[in-house]
Image 1 (cartoon, helix red, strand yellow):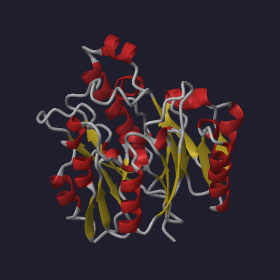
Image 2 (spheres, one colour):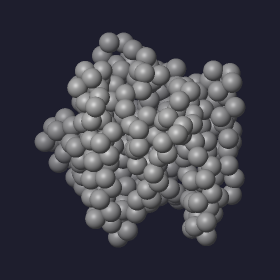
Image 3 (cartoon, rainbow, N blue to C red):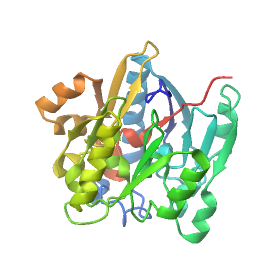
Length: 309
């Protein structure tokens, strides 16, 4: 059985990070007020938040593969590589269609070529042609994987299309569980990974974001049938990125649960105590990245599950 967590993470150091107007309509987690306050310093502050996170992850025994963004083309959200690519233990690399035109330029073949020097890449599954049809599936933003059981959870939204989801399943052999989810204002949640995270033996999820009671029960039962202890978070906790966390492991096999400081503070003491039974929470100040980008710690990490050559 494939492991759920990896000790190798790919991250992209920002060069021209900032508030992306092309994503704001569908991403209610972007904060225009913070963006306005930090407009002149967003890149420098985001770079500092990024570097601090990388340094602490490496010091803890996580292998972080860092690639610098490029000045051109302009890609303000390149700090979130998990939306354009996913790496699988089968050797497959999947490329995903993205809604915002200026995010499509984040896809960089030279990164995959560089990884292929060390890791076995058996096949590249390219789903980007769906962009021509106006259909999108934004990587492990749209998909939350139970890699151990080959199940992908997805809340449907303008960035998560059922047709692309079906093609992903056909190309990878994953079973998919789709549902609808909304925020406190009834707006569809743009990415599944802000409302849920799956670890090896636990799952964090905002069940109240799933308005249909039958779907809500179905999702919970699916998670429990996969052997996951469900940690239910509130809408307010979700709004503070408590669902946007990722289990990783160190080179010695120690389990970590990576999140932002905002997310950590949103959890109750009882929830943190429970999560400690499964993985050690590790948090970083990411408020500039969160406010401008509308994504948090999980979005910044693309897990490398490829087999070594």
